Image (cartoon, rainbow over all chains, first blue to last red; front, top):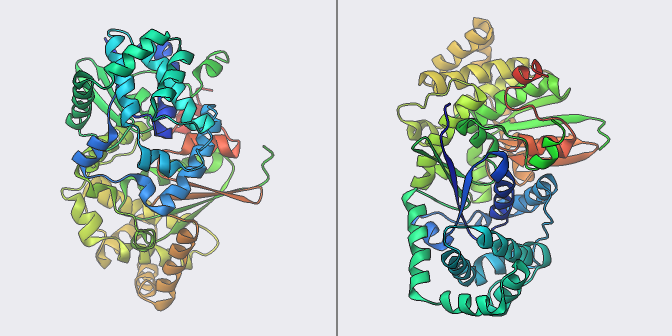
Length: 229
Length: 229
């Protein structure tokens, strides 16, 4: 395949451990595949409603399987994944709408670059999936923002921006783009190659994606593999 | 990891293209991983009912995605996959209960070896997923059996055996084993390593499975990769 441009868009949400794994792996491949990776915070609730899909963990055997599957994946991908004491509380009761609006505000301020979106997202993911900390309250966004390297005044501005109609509309717009791609869950990865869009769902399609876009898959820890080649 | 024995059991059904892909890949790894691979025909209907799961294609966006996903996978795994004109008719309306009973009869007659189970299964999968042919009628089982190398008298005996209570009970028993492993769909792969059982679901966990059992993943076409090593 003759590849001219590769732009990977990842539509994600913050309370999904599978999306967290996908995010880390794609960030690791940013230079390996010489691609432009765009991180697009979108709201899963809207996608589930539009597609009529139900969260997998609603089926008890799937929830059981996911616990083991995530344990295996965390070791394989090498990320410190520790389930929160009550993952259902994180994923269903509390949800991540406020966090997604905060990240959208970061994206809006950071226009043209995903540098800060990546750093703040990673800090928020580490809060829930490594340290069982809150990602719903303004204080949590502040802490994550400071760790990511934002100043206190930046954070103050972002917390205000996150509540604005413009940011709410932006999050809706990106969610609508995911729905237009016929999403039924996250992570959704859209590869733009040679004027075509290829859509992949989930954290388990990297090897297949590499095959489809004409790139080499070096496993979920490409730096490690690369040094062995 | 110190690995003493690796016995992979694959619980499968005949009308699932993802199971067909998994079946082919696992058969290719039989010698690569030096494992005992047991093919265990089970009935998905019982698993779905026991787990309260719904077939993924019931969500229209998932069905759309699966069509593309299977196209990508068929090219990657290198199997000639051509969707039947009416896949819903194959998967939901007609179903594969009679075919699973026929395969169970083959397994019962072939006790101690999966040689013929593998060959007959492959012939039946090729009927639906390559040539859009029936897998519900006795004539279809006969044709598949002849192609697999069974004699006409063997087939006659197997068609009778497939209707026996013993075979119906055997299929129920294997299905119950899948349910005991907390299955919520097929393919289900159970790896018995060092006295432990690791359970994997789906056609997209080979690389992870290899990591967990301490084996090398060489992609879905290991023969091809092997000659390049």
